[in-house]
Image (cartoon, rainbow, N blue to C red; front, side):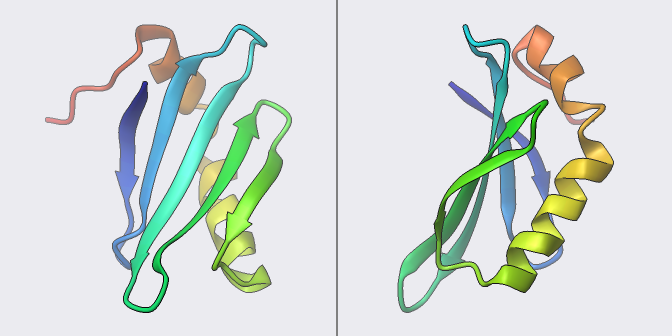
Amino acid sequence: MMYPFLTLDDETEITHSEYLSSGRVKVYVEKADEKDCFHYMTCYLPDYTVENIFGFNEDEVKKYMEVIRSTAHLIPEFSKEGWFVHE
């Protein structure tokens, strides 16, 4: 199951999983696109492995990875609980 984490000002959605059996957390980045429907990528923490990139150019991947890196200390904490309540 994936849980909402952040919605960026460009309407990109970042979600995360619970801790996986591998000890990693899946972070999924998705943005709606008129032509392709969605652009997306997957990152796994704590090793920052990026895969399954579709539609994002190199600069966009770099930008979203900066967001993930700057908030990575929060994601595993939320993943322990399996969710985060936005207030």
